[in-house]
Length: 220
Image (tube, rainbow, N blue to C red; front, side, top):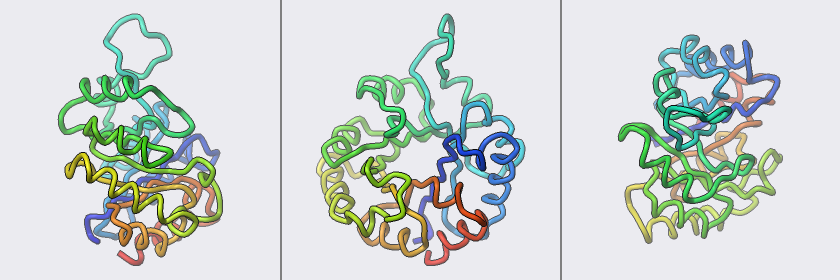
């Protein structure tokens, strides 16, 4: 399980933006584990988080497939790369885009830039996997932010996603998310065939984020 990926989506929680984002990133960077810990941060916090935790892998929460020019309010991939991002989420349940948006973004980013395309169900996961992002993360929207992990509430959607993605490609890593909070949740995700998890509130809203992080990787 040493290759396990744990992506923490900072969203815009009060405990995970501005100075709090930098503090959380430093906590993540200090965790001793063989798992890969990734912080997915607001574009506004990207540079500050990269500076605060230079050894931590930092992703954006969203990017737009645009060129340089008149694109007010959009997020340019080249700017993200220049500011230290090594990857991005796309099509999260809270920021849905078209499959064409995802395809165009994949065509634009550097070859080594990681893209995790989020899916609400098995069919969407399979369709996104056909585009060959680095990862596909299945997250049932009704479980996001809840207290029950997808790994116990609906393990079938995880195993079915693994099977569906593998029908089209062996190259795309598979993650699951929604309600993930404990090391047992992460271990079950791996047993179901994923390479890791995508989570947010299990860390960002924890009374002790560092303890939550340590627990997440405790069974790896």
